Image (cartoon, rainbow, N blue to C red; front, side, top):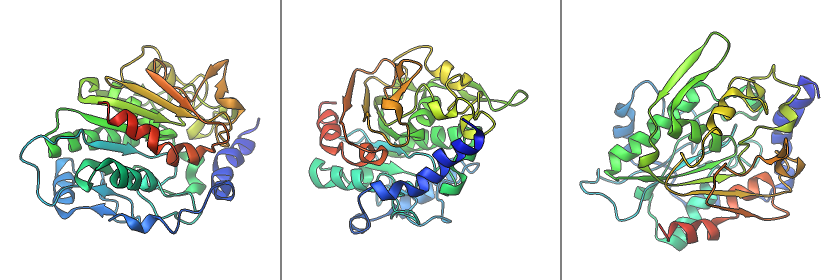
Length: 309
């Protein structure tokens, strides 16, 4: 498949994804979007190198307490990591599907007793579907994710957090947690740091491409399909992430659909299920779910697992 064809698959298909995706516009305003003033002040100063506030994007963030906690919380805080071109806690954006984790946040608050002080998300990328093919697992995106997780740990005083990633957010979060050194090109490398596995109570991977994407096989010139840090099935970063298992957290769970309309091919890449994080303790699949359904419709299963932790 040519680079142009993959661009259509990864970029244009994301733009059209809303056609197969139920309308969430009427639901997204039921949560109080954005960071609290207290958390915004904290996270802005926690690491000034990265823009966690994202004032350039509407409803790009969520989370925080009214005043900084002085003791560890009763629940493990949850950090969400969205997918390629999505918005952290969006309103649908220009294409309908850019709602990020709004639906899952709403579910956990309505049925799980979670509050805004328990749930955290920022927007790591440009949130522009037209740039989807240009987004690889860059130093900026991996380190934004890493430092945000570390910031939530510091702010909440929790011993551990839970990380829930969707799509590209799965592999970004895995790199952020596992740490190590990765290449962005033949001449450019970056170091994440030591693993923070011991600070992650559980890792949830929703519709990830852990072994890459079939459609990236012949389009390695696109950043998102790079053989260094993209979704090429021969990606150096993915190979490193998959070389050992169970480094994402104390528990690892995967959620996927054989009908995923972005990953496609029943989630099979080189005879492996790319949607399952290697070494997962449990995996959950639902036929008929689209790529974004996996993000939004597994709330009951996710909550049940959370309540066991």
